[in-house]
Amino acid sequence: MSLLKRLLATLLLACCGAHAWADQALPELVLGIKGHKLTAEVAATESQRATGLMHRRMLPEHRGMLFVFPYAAAQSFWMMNTYIPLSIAFLDNDGVIINIADMKPLTTDSHSSTKPARYALEMNQGWFAKRGIKPGARVEGLKRAPAGQ
Image 1 (cartoon, rainbow, N blue to C red):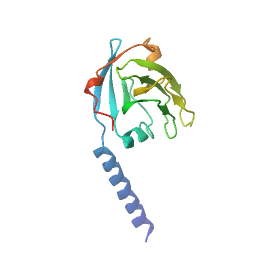
Image 2: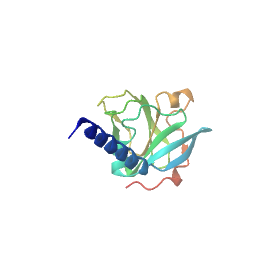
Image 3: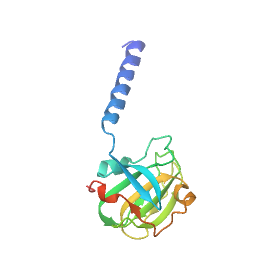
Image 4: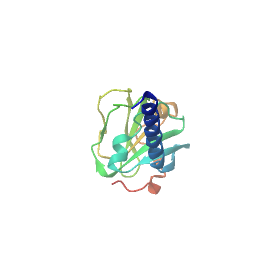
């Protein structure tokens, strides 16, 4: 196969792959915490949660990702293939923040909930601290989230 044909085939596969990813856009949900609004993509399936914010290079300031689990349990996250420094808030069944952890990009360090968590909310690192949001604050709007699968 000539070099030109190989390049065209590679380009076609890349375009098809990008299109397939775009077709799988995650649902979005507007949430509120202590008067601050944010828009979160919702990862409610095992596959969506496994991918999370991997491979992304930026995250707009008031956007994040909400991970929804089928039930409250010990949850742990790492940052392999994640380029954005993030803060993660672990939430109980009622949307109350249990604990918040800062996560360094491209590491396999484990960041865990200190109690059983039903949700986890990832935002740009420092987003919660800049707004004075601490454990005990309640995240509003979770009732509109799809059920965790």
